[in-house]
Image (cartoon, rainbow, N blue to C red; front, side, top):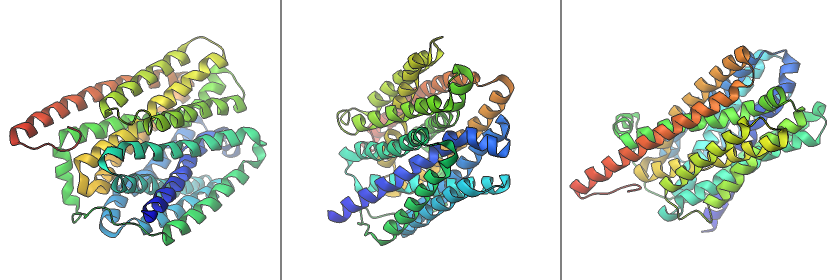
Amino acid sequence: MRQKYIAFAANFIGIFLFGISMVIIGSTLPLLKEKFGMTDIEAGSLFSILPVGILVSSVTFGPIADKWGYRWVLSIASLFLGLGFFGIAHTHSMNLLRLCIFVFGAGGGAINGATSALIADLSETRNKIANLNWLGAFYGIGAFCMPMAMTLIDSMYYTVLIDIACGLSILVAILFAVISYPITVEKEKISFKLIPVFVKNRMFLTICFYLFFQSAFEAIVNNWSVLFFMDSVGVVQEKALVALSFSVLGMIMMRVLTGSIFKKLSYNQLIRMALTLLTLGLICLILPAPYYIRLPGLFFLGAGLAPGFPVMLGVIAEIFKNVSATAFSFAMVIALSGNIIINYLTGVFVDKFGAGVYLYIVLIEIIAMVIVFRLIRVSEKNRVSENSHSGQCSGPC
């Protein structure tokens, strides 16, 4: 039992650093644009490099973790994260910056996927979604700390904050290397031959495409909200960073609630609540109102995005209990493809039409997620019907 709690704690610290990593480029974007003389399209390309790194590690971490365990996956990933932090803070070459962001993403992607899979393996079925939401809350705390810390220091000292994150990453790598990992479930032999099995499962596949838009939406909020508030709302960088922190605060609060008060709600109820909160957020943002009226809009967006990954990964873990890490890898590949494609397109549209296009992209995201969620529900009903005829029932049915 003690080993289990230590493993939980290590995972929470690792995902805390991943939270910092996912907002660091958005938080420092105005400074990076000034330092390197970047256009909005070039900035958008940076946002696309990060998920490419995450994508590469997401393809590989699952089979490796399922076959050989989590220890070295998490340790090496933490070192990659530290290397990326250091490079982003100190490089003066645009090409090296791109390389560091890729390495950074590769480390972060492995930490994100491996911690989620390990928490799912360590958790009983009834606590799986709740524990994944607690993990997500620590991600949110990390993401909240970075922009808030940026508002408290002179912008010329932002590299100090990144160096601190670098040092923490190295310490976490050591922690992952020395702790004991309890054996949770007997794993099947892992092979990429599982891919056809994943593709044939319609409910799983539609969940993956929900995560396609979920991942893109999170990246849009993390990466483009500061620029939107500065250019379209007309506030200084410090106030724009506070707005970004509000989105993370909404995410933290919702994940804490989902892991406690709302933990008995079904995934269907949680996602319906999430989509409602996203719609409220958009309504607040489109109001022709001052900064303080629009501020709750980002809080609602953060709260609405909070259940997506923990809830859907919890459902996936129930569908593929013995190969959860590999299933997570497959899901993350599709999810991060959305992050890459839509982030790049956002950069193109912002460069052409201005930061106000942010609101239209948010609207399209919400509509897409509503449609895909309806398809998930249809797939689930078909799955339940098929299982009832065969006398079986697995997963969330």
